[in-house]
Image 1 (spheres, rainbow, N blue to C red):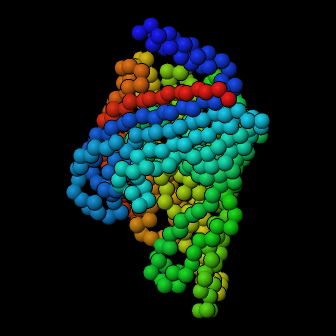
Image 2: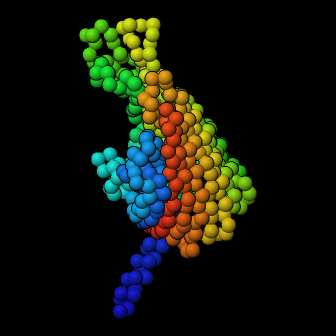
Image 3: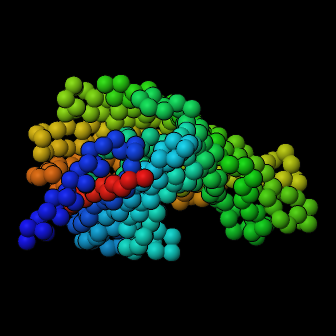
Length: 402
């Protein structure tokens, strides 16, 4: 018994010495995440594959598309697991991160399945892998229960090569990102000539941001430039539908602490541009069809669709254990004259919650959400959803000598 006690004391002493020393002299690994359960009720209709997320782009495009109204849902898809590592190298500290959640997409759409969020390595001023695009400001995402979040904000994790000439309290990020876009063939969609038109990605997307930080919060200005190109692989009919257009965007965001104790915080932003819809949190189409009346060889071409998004959220701490967030967000797209009648034109999103953290690492609360979708033909659909969540956080850091 005494021997076991001495061994435990020795192990504790070693662990304490390692954790107490400068972490730059050791390798460290953090395992973190949370288990989260959603219980809610959709009062109206939404695409069944998105039963637990209020994506306004997934609301009905015609009456009773997803009837009937009113559905209870349970889910654990927000639960998250991640690993972060820090290792010293002759070139500086190497940081790595691998993070997943259970919100199935792609072939697992609507199911509970592994979804990759972050996979990257960062050494000095360079980062390679998948993480938040420099075009976005992840810090303006409000403290909400709903998974997908406000429609009118840039929010996209992308594979990239990023360079950070300025790091620390203020930052400058520059990145080359994986390209990709979507197109609305509109009223021309049934023409077989368009079957031979395919998107071409010959250049990476270019993004950059500048952030200024102080005790008051931060402000960030980000930009995006991208080539949107398509090629017609069947040109024997006397015409060629190949073409390209420029996508661009500017995103001004900020977080403002309204008092010194940070009990009242404003999170907001405005984004404008054209052809950057796939970088938005919830907007569908980058390019629309326009008629090229001056050319019989290229009778139609594409246009980068203009978009404007706004976000304004206010968060208040009622006490150290009780908080609320309330806010509004919208997205507006200027569609072309030949857009599909049911194409997405405008989305609106609002929510209010009351969250309680009775003890460290445990949170529960309720949230009321509203979303509305407006189509080009004027058809509107909306959904009201109530959601109750319980969330358990965990984190453990492990140290070892080099």
